[in-house]
Length: 475
Image (spheres, rainbow, N blue to C red):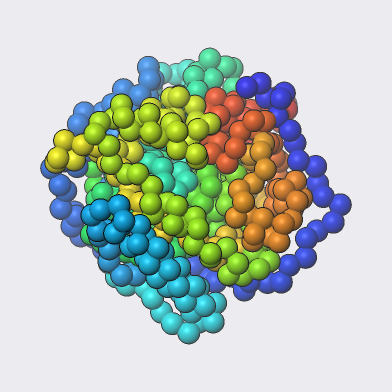
């Protein structure tokens, strides 16, 4: 899809006036336990996953997999329930359980906004992350600016859903004469998605607050990511599976001064983009640029309105097990949210979002129940939308938005606000050092529907942002 086919959202003539939702402060990201990294017992499947030799991602990059403790304390709720067997019994269970979890979430949000209760517990969860590292140490890169890229997926997707777009992006950088390069990419997986969800099986509950997702991101950046992409004289693939925490003095310094040897560009999709924006509002020193892909950010004009349970019930009842991957791919291609996906993205999901069961079938790594619970997030959405103007203007914002109307739940939250007005009010809410594009023909799932168009836009944004003053580039 050529970039010329895309649209730029003009600045609105007026600013939307909404009442404050009184955004919460994030719970502090505490220094990690020195024993936490080695505390997780790895199932045999994970030992095979992380003990494999580095995967050759392309001709210049290899991929390695790592594990980090998530932030504590955090919200868990009650243990994940087990649905009954049989179609009729399961349908009845889904209706009853939906009512229960919706009521619980409404009560939780009320406690959060009125400060009447404390729901956090000390359960230790873990995040699985992938590192894509440049193995070419030749002089060809020495004159270019080094960028570190962080990718945050949307709900329901594994961390490797970015790989089609990343392949396109790295091909473009290698082939072009640009003034930047990316020695390292980190793809961060939420505690309740993909391999992380399987690693945390039995610890995830019926309540999830995406503010904890923001804290997990900050925890990784402050406490675990190494100080520089590839240290001099160190093999690019030498990092251990369990990343050790950095010194507390270094983590404290990052909070106010950022990284000494990294320029950090972070991109997040959907609710991952919302959590990323909230993290940047909290600790801006860590970031140079944010690329926000149709992030789930909406002014909450009618608090509580979206909790009618229909979407929760739909997700909770989705098919999650198949006899083999071929059958799964066929069914997933017909699943309404996936119909517009790029074939390579669908193949990636089938390969990385499913696992082989002991019964010889394949199933989603993320259970339908846990996915449905994670979709019930409206508190952070409204809070982060309100906080957008507070994000440090030093941080460049690149908004990559859907070219189609927003999902129906958005209209419920905003009282039917026109979609073009909603997008304009969002992408221009912090107008300084911000730019935007709408990817023509792409819906909300931009990384899955338009990986090449996304890569082209990211490539050009980085080219403009990190060009020297004498060689400007245009988007």
